[in-house]
Length: 89
Image (cartoon, rainbow, N blue to C red; front, side, top):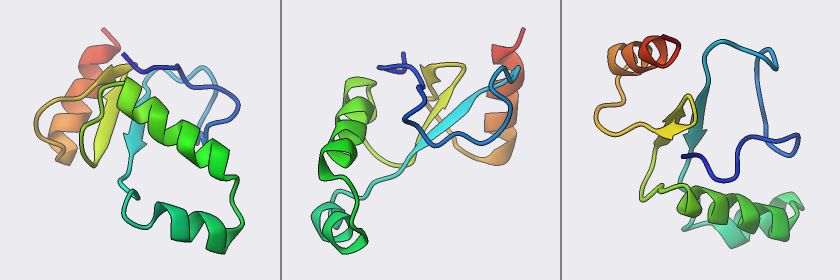
């Protein structure tokens, strides 16, 4: 399960009460410190986002959550579409 669930701190696109939910985690571990400093980002928040992904079971990138559950398997459009549709039934 997505831990913690989405909150106002997350970057969300779409309606708040959307029928389907897809969350993507990217891997910026290699350049995390450099980008954080260069872009003037909140290092603690970036670290919290990374910790959130790890706590949710993300072990690599990309990491997708469909309906709050980590998507395991293929990440092609057809697979993600099928997972999204299955999560709404």
